[in-house]
Each structure stands twice: as structure tokens, then as C-alpha cells.
Length: 142
Image (cartoon, rainbow, N blue to C red):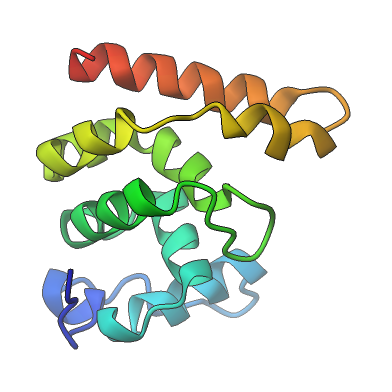
């Protein structure tokens, strides 16, 4: 799925995420940079940050769902499946903006999560991802 060369700032008309303020956190700086990066040049890490913050999903939901359907374990910059975890947390918005693509995504095999998230000593990551997946599938009627 080809992405346009426009930025989320120009597509949305919202420049408020560009101003990082006097003492911006690392997250605020990353969001500002991603918001002003042309969509066709976004890195996986930038997409993960935007999806995690639920910013720009009107334009990102479909391409992210399509990408993750083929690459569910994609590792952006944290751990295998980090983009998927953010997408599952944003399932309401993904279903609203890209219902067909998101339903296809929710139908893929997620058995890989138990192995990939085994590094988490208390199992919180797997538990949250599984809970988000269950809720998303229920909402999608799957």
C-alpha cells in the first residue's frame, strides 16, 4: 500500500504537535518529528510512536493493519511485536478508520506472542496484548 508524500501535519491541518515546547520529553520530540515526516518516509519506529499515541490514525490505520497482517512480529525499535502491541491498544480507532484491514489483521495467528514476549519477567506484556486482542476481536465480531 503506497503512502502519500504528505505529512500528517499537512493532511490534518494540525500544527499543535509540532511545537515541542521549552522542555520537551523524548516522546514529545519523537511525535513532533514523526508528525512532520512525509508518510512515505516514516520509519517503523515513528509509526509505532504515532499508533501508540493514537495520532494520525485516520491516515495510518489501513497501511499499518495491512503491514502487520503480513508481518505481525515486526520489531520497530523495542522488541519483536512492538508495533502489533500498539495497534492492538489502538484497536477501536483502527476498526473505525480501517475496518476491513483491521478485521483481517485480527484474524492472523497470534500464537507467536507467547514465545516472543517470554523475555518479560512478570508476563505483563503478554497479558495486556492478549487482553487487547480478545477485546478487539469481540468488538470486530470475530
